[in-house]
Length: 358
Image (cartoon, rainbow, N blue to C red; front, top):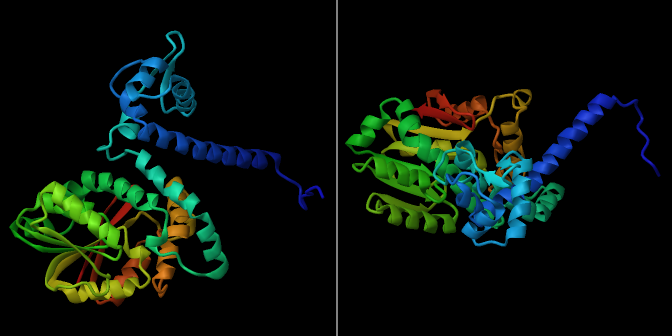
């Protein structure tokens, strides 16, 4: 039976929505092309090289020319590369290189596409979770999730953690320079822990995570950086990791993933030195859904649906914050845990940097 709308359609609104849907579909296809360009070294083959022919680029990357030409055309169509019709050459601008070729750039994007790739791979798990209400533990996801998240956050932390976020906290940098005791809760692959250990040689850093494989990777990251003497890692939960008297306890983009964030904040209150600080870094969000209507909000709500909320539910689901919790809900958690001071130290388009004190 043919579909018959029950109400008159606004043609302009329909066309606008179809256009948006096609644009989203195009971006999904484009994500595959970005991943291929990164993994095959095509972007790096073009960076800072000026105009090149498809044959030149294929030779530099060690790929077949016909595939490369079609890939190049897809990049031109998406405004990710420039095309010079007269010379039949392709060029990467400095801005495009920052986003697509420079792996140390804070706006390097290709790694981020590993996350939706993992979400597609885990679609059947998500369908089952929706129908049953069951959770999906972090460790049960497609392996691309861990590498994608770690690599994406690593660059943001590298650009901002030491030069901007820590100085925004009251008196923390001075303590770290003098020699402080630091806990990095939910440390993942340890990039945040290692960055702080590299910057503050007089301090001791302890990273904790529930995911065994991430802890193993974090130890390797610390060893490669030469800071294993002051950055250690242990498998432990946020509500019972060892140690007391911490001068700084950090939660980097992880509190909203926990099944009982109040228990995590309560344990932090017990483990913290009396004049210590909690640094809570969370995905940027306003407090109301209607104020989160943006590309970033959409991205975070989507990831939260099948990753963040799914893990929190698997972890007991006492309070499922989600990745768009907002400052007000987070402040309420810490006040209930015994903290008397809570403020927004700074923000970025992607993160809230919050400070809590007893």
